[in-house]
Image 1 (cartoon, rainbow, N blue to C red):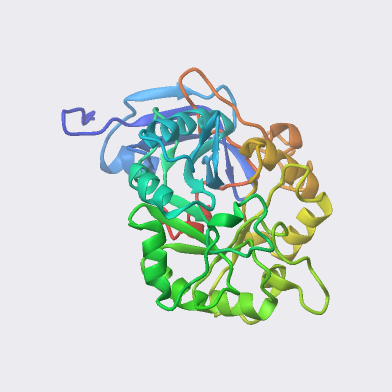
Image 2 (cartoon, rainbow, N blue to C red):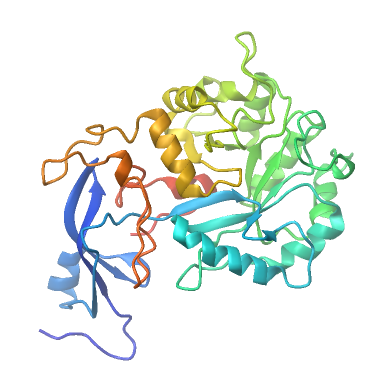
Length: 368
C-alpha cells in the first residue's frame, strides 16, 4: 500500500478513542480529518490507499463541532466598538481566548456607534479562517444604529438613526464598506426598512430583527422581505401579548414564505431570560434556537443553562450510548480540552457531525 506521502499532499489526522454524536446516540468511532474537512475512512483507505499521518487519542471524550457565536461585543478587556488604531489585535485576543469555551468561529459585534467608528473599525476586521491561533472570524455583526429609541437598551441614544429618503445610501454612508459585514440588526418598523432589508440580503448579508417595537404584521413583512433572524428573543422588543405577540409571534407564524426558516438568539445566562421563556421558545420552534449568549456569560455556560432549562440535557433524552448509559447528561454538557488542542469538544447534545444545520443561519455552506 502506498502511503501517499509527498510535498503536495496535506496530512491526514486521525482522532481515536473518541465518542461522536450521531442520530442522538454517542458512538465510539475514529474520525479522520484533512485540512479541516471530515473524511470518509473507506474512501481514504480503499480509493486513496492512505493511512493517517498523525493520531490523537481523545481519552474517551466527546468530539463535536465547535460553537458559532454570532453576537459577541468583545471580551477579556476588548470592546469591538472602540475605534483604535489596532482593532485587529483585540479581535485576535478574543478569538484565541474563546476557544477554551468551545467557540470555533464568531461574528465580532458592534453596538450603535457614530459613522466615523464604523468607517475606522470595519476595514480592520476581515473574514479570517480559524486554526491554532484562534476562532475564525465569519464577518461583523452590526447591532444598530437603525433601531428603536424605546427599545435601545444600552445603545447610546445620541447615535441612533432612521432611514432617510434614499434608505440604502444612508446605510452605506453610515457604515461605509459592507465587505466585512455578515449580519445587521435593525428595527423593521422604521420607515423604508423593507427596502434596506432587500438590499442587504441581495448582498448576502443576514438581516436580524431586534431592539424593536414592531408588531407581528410588521415583523412578518420583514421576513417576507428577507429577514431571517431575531436578535436576543424576548429582550429589547415588545412583550408577548395574546392579541398581538409582536416579533415573538414569528416562532409560530403561518405567514412566512414557503421554505423560509426564522432563527433566533436568546440570552441564556440565567438572568436576562427566565427558564420558562427558554422552554416556551424552544418548544414552540425547536429548530430556530441558534445562539445562546448576549451577556458577559461565556457561550458554554449559556449552553449548559439552556440544556438544563429545556430538559435537553436530561438523561435518556438522547438515547443510549454503546455502553448502555445515557448518551447525554448535564455533566457531559461541558467543554473538554487537551494539551494538543482538541478545541472542538463542545456540548454533545447540540450537534451531529453529519446533520448539523448551524451554518444555515449565516447562509454558509456545510462541508463534508
